Length: 344
Image (cartoon, rainbow, N blue to C red):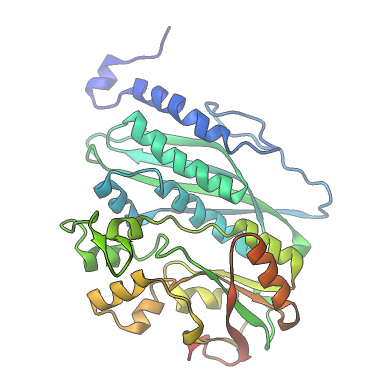
């Protein structure tokens, strides 16, 4: 007998819409299938058998995050196929910081009213993020929340699990004075600071679709640009050079995130003139009259990831990054000092 509940539908939850959503998302999930996937979608748990050959002491590494209030931009534009990339990126870009390769991802969608096409669009973005990260989407959950969320509202979160050999874990103890700090360019704001962004640009009343000369595109397109995923280029750099530290520049900007990959007694000295900052940051700062310190303490300022390498292998790292579509550049160095981050 087909599963259906008229009483549940009258309460605001249409379980048949959920089944239709699974059918629509299936082709997107299929794109992410990699060796190791044991189960398809629809089971009670996602099964994955990792290849441990060549690993002496494998360590699992996990990361979880959501998209944050950037989702409001997607809702205002009625465009839902990009924020899934952000969701994956915020998780896999974290676990790569210790050198772990992402294996699989699971998502969670809470939505006011389950519209199968909207849910499928959200999952298509998640699948695209998984493809970019080289991991599998092995499960997820969509929960309809009538009476708790408005019909048009939703939230998206997820988590990823990766693996690294214990001897290859990248931790702050590796960083030395004289090391070079490489900047990996961001695609824009990524998925951080959007409560401030939405306030500055008055997004609830702004024409997000109008072309903006300062940006070369509409404000909406600039704000909705997906977070860059750094997994493949960073893994290539790790294989080619002596990588001593990696920092994902998210909410908290330079001042919060760079110290997370530093031992005590060392300072990251950044040359501000070297930074290649996209125009959205200048527009944001000028429109909101935001002090420079706050910009660097909230946003990535064009640097989505910082990779600390030995000076002798910096060129090898840059070459590996470029070969994988991520043209990094030198933005600073590690020096002795008690002040954790210095911008000069």
